[in-house]
Every structure is written in C-alpha cells, then in structure tokens.
Image (cartoon, one colour):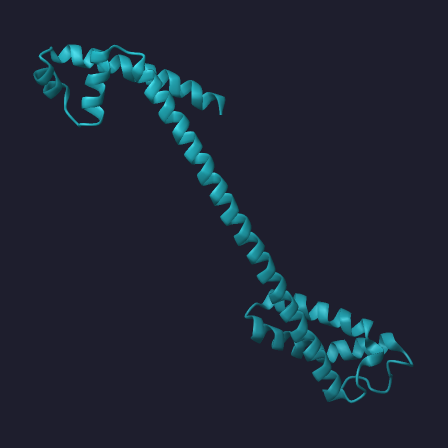
Length: 180
C-alpha cells in the first residue's frame, strides 16, 4: 500500500484524502464484504466509513499501515452500527406484528360473535319446525330424507323450511358484510 504520503492531512487534506481513498478503498470494501456477505452493503458501509474518516482526518495516524487499521476499525464499527439498527428495526417490526395479530384476533373474535348472534336471531325468527329441521341438518348432520322420516313430513317440506332459513341467513349476513 502506497498512498501519497508526501501530502499530509495538514498540508492539503483533499489531496491526501484522495490518495488515501484510492489506495485503501478496495481493501476496505473487500473486508466489509467478507464480514457482511453483501457486496452492495459493503460498498455503502465503506462510503459511510470514509465519510467518518474525512470528518476525523486530523486524527488519522501518520503511518500507512496504522491508517489502514484505523479505517478498517471505523468500517467494522459502521457494520456493527448497521447490525444494531437492523436488529432494533426487527424488534420493532416483531412487536408491531405481534400487536397487530393480537388486535386482529380480537377483532375477528368480535366479528365471529356478532355473526353468531345474527345467525341465532335469524334462526329464532322462523317457525319452530323450521328451526328444528335446520338444527338437525346443520348440527346433527342429518340429511333431508332422514329428517323427513324422523319428523314424519315430506322431504320437500324439510327442504322448503331449511331453504327459507338459509335465504334469510344469506340476506342478513350479506348486509352485515356490506356494511364492513
């Protein structure tokens, strides 16, 4: 490594920094790429490190190898700062996501309860026989034919009563969904 050490940071800082940058930048990027496994991130972090070097140019060691070590340490610190920020953002995102899931679950539970209330109310507005046929079909799992045999009515009667309840439910639930 040979950057222009004829110029010092005190005599002509821009020329000194330019030579330093040209000679050490590839090494710094390679180092950052090795520890980050990300070429773009390595280049971004190297730029950030050199900005800090420029801001503290007067603190840079005079010896070339010491100056490179100093820059590499600043680069590593930029990488560590990047990791800390990424971890903080991930924690914030995870906290937000878990809160959102909890709120969403509570909201879904309320919606389910409201839907069940509408279903119960709608079923209860029909004749006793229709309610009984519907519950035998939906809760007991009986077919229309089995209900007709058990209740002593025709299969068409069972179909008509259950169909009436289903139409009422579709209408009530559709209006509920429309308002949300």
